[in-house]
Length: 336
Ligand code: ISE
Image (tube, rainbow, N blue to C red; front, side, top):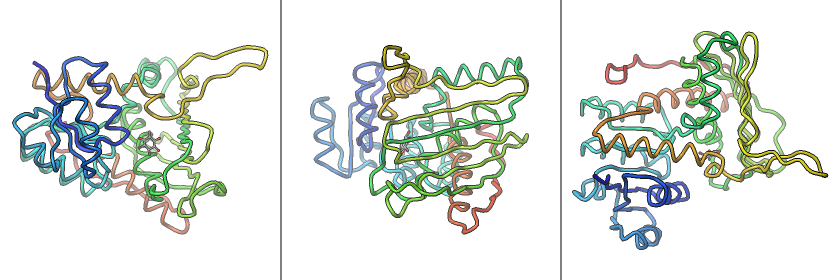
């Protein structure tokens, strides 16, 4: 069976997913598209022979659609995800599941009412080969327990529409989820430090900023988020354990050595750096939908990341960059 997928919000991310589904992955086909920009929806749908829907709700309700991929603007995710749940259709929602923990709780409530897991969150780093090798070293126990994790999340630039809190709930959210997954425990507090800002930022942004987080067992995580660094999309991570450390290799590509020295090509965006991870994530989702199963991250993961983001935004907005405790609801049985 081919999984007939409807895509809501085919912006840059959505179009990259569509190209993957159509050209690289097995078992899925994009049959429907909707976008607040009708002309964009038509541009994307026409070459695929996909149907254009006026709004996401109609796309979700259509009998021609088996599963839904939501890649619209974060604040609109909640409405589409809840509609997909109510229609009993599996939904892969790009991160953030929703920009606030309260919105994620409403999604979890709808899913619990439906009585089965239907939501997967697009936390693609869980599929990245190098992060997986790092996790395997930690799980082997050969270098002892985790003590510290140092992260760097650098973007070449962001659009002017990028708001101050997006540095946390749209950008740092990747490290927040990856750290929960890597360390297999929850984050209990967040503090946001504000270094001297770069002169290249938009005035409404604090750029860079540094999140300092602590987990239940006391692992200390730092995360430099620098979204206007200019030179490229550069993701770094070093996990320090009791008797050794593991670091993501630079850009996971070749290192060139010649008369000018040794260097790596720095990727320009997340689609390039995490291409393998996006493919693996989408393929796993399509194959699970085909089997009528749910695998991978859940609404609970979307919620857990959002709670940490909310605490981070609170710290960012406080004058003294205070440490904010993270408080979560008990995990519902559906996500046990
Ligand atoms: C964007 O939405 C992403 O997901 C990127 O991975 C991140 O680097 C960027 O800051 C976000 O805006």
